[in-house]
Length: 222
Image 1 (spheres, rainbow, N blue to C red):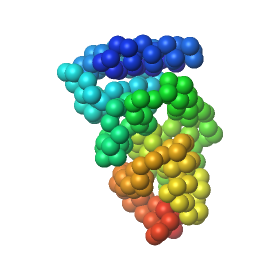
Image 2: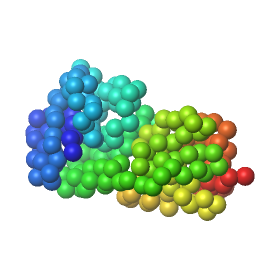
Image 3: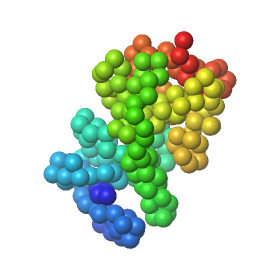
């Protein structure tokens, strides 16, 4: 699998690249935002995941993220020296799949990469209908009345978790542990923000995602 590493610090790129290559991945590199977009356009059918720094010259990570999300749902992990909660929420709003603050353990980074790539490459069964919401796990697609709904990786995984636990009230902590797949230290607004976007994209079907006051959410077809 091919991973694009975008960071203006050569030392950081080399560190991350060495750990990824030793884990069996092929690595492409870019030292700034403009170069990142060039490399992405040249290899977008080959890139399986992007590690994207936020603070970079010429074009920052947010701008790169916005442009890539206009045409691709490739998993993106943001790397940042910032630890502010608002920055993380902003990143998730734009379609970030994972968020790792520097300094970080390269081994943990590789583990996160492996977890995301496993989830995106796992093959499922044929499409299943949930009250008119058709989910095809093998293609990772969601359709309503035959029309494909564009969801980020995290939005897709959150929706899938809700529908596969239909009629069960799920706490925010349980959702974080199962969808984010690690101990997330931000607050529950991260989930609320994703739910809001999913409901909007589902249109009338968004009403199936019920808010359970004081607990979390439940998917219920009625």
